[in-house]
Length: 220
Image 1 (cartoon, rainbow, N blue to C red):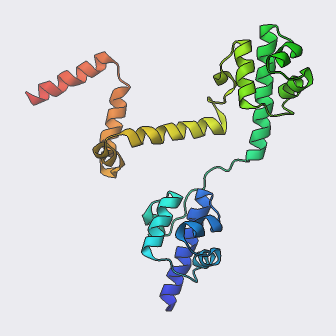
Image 2 (image 1 turned 120 degrees about the horizontal axis):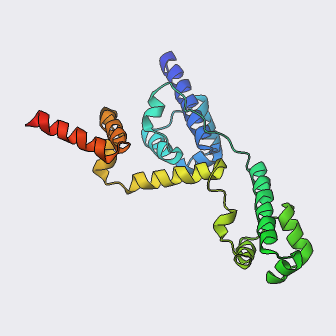
Image 3 (image 1 turned 135 degrees about the vertical axis):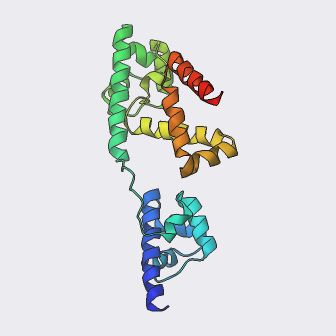
């Protein structure tokens, strides 16, 4: 490689690494998808090995980044990192607290709840304190016994899980749109039309009628 190609290879390698980190994948993960050795993929990130166009295309799909990312110079904005260990412990305590709240409101004892799931009172107490994770089916059964649905224990309103669920729902709704509509939405030139539609959706019926009448006056 000449000096220009060496420089381009370094930039491409940095962009590949940036996309991998953005997607939360390891060198081994990417190498496996491409069918190459991990050391060869690491060399590509260092700029010492140049991937083929098909390999880059597959990598873009696997890492869920635009193919154009690898032709530019801008890095991806890094997603907020979640400490899953801390999140797990926190959710265990929250779910346990909600279980205790439901039990107290229902006027039930540890012993009564334990009998329902064929466990001992100490286990139920450990569940409520968050010291022990509650098996899903046991939680479901206790909730039914106490008159609360499984949704009662879910974190669907705020926090990392709520953000995840909202993003997944948005992606699914976009995927459900007809292909022509998806193509229209992603075109930057159509942004003004979408913004206009959003503003119109916020207006009341009376104001919409006034706008429609004004358009008719102009037309005729």
